Image (cartoon, rainbow, N blue to C red; front, side, top):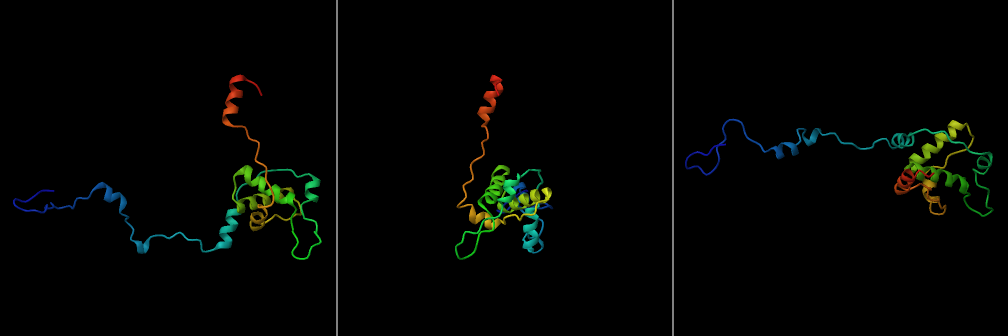
Amino acid sequence: MARAAGAERPVTLGVEERSPIAARTKSKVTPKYKTKYRVENWPAYEASLRQRGDVTVWFDEGAIGAWTALPCGHPGGQQRYSDLAILTVLTLRRVFHLALRQAEGFAASLIHLMGLDVETPDHTTLSRRSATVVVPPPDLPTLRAIRRRERTGSP
């Protein structure tokens, strides 16, 4: 940029100069044509959230037999799943750091791989029942304890 003699405003010489900051913040796409990311098909989106990961786990016969809840004898809606079923899925959720829908899909995948004829609790049931079922924290060693064992060589 150059200043003309006696002129108060700068005179541009050919190409207009821009600051590098303005070039980085200015989008080249007009807002009219900018892509908007919105979920339009919620059932497909929820199904895709459930389809994450596969692991092989074994359930003993006692757990399979106790998967469905016994009738409580009170009027009203009965529980479909026992506390053991809810605790199992919520424990998988905590160990693998999953969201409720992902935990639902993960448990369904495990049950499918084992060929069991039991249903998986859905994420809304898990959410409601998590208030009454207490999930114990996983017994994971801290990094400090692991390093102490490495230094001393003890198991």
